[in-house]
Length: 111
Image 1 (spheres, rainbow, N blue to C red):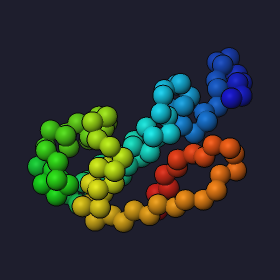
Image 2: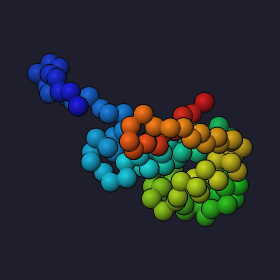
Image 3: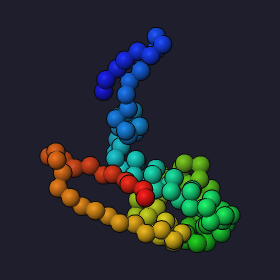
């Protein structure tokens, strides 16, 4: 990544994935999970649901909803997060295409 100075402070451009920038293992998966968690939080807010109502609708215990809303999604798989979004009234489309590089990447696009 390119480094430059702004007002005497050295800054480094992001790759677009903070987890990769920090060298965290499974950065692509964490980026996907965090994006799904953000959409779940938006959906709960948009629907005006309490944590208990959201938990019932998503089929998970209320403490997991509380953790999810605080950014703790480690105990939930990508598949479970997608299921939660489905139960909140969201469609999910998975698109598979050939990669431009030898190893492909996971991405999340939100409409």
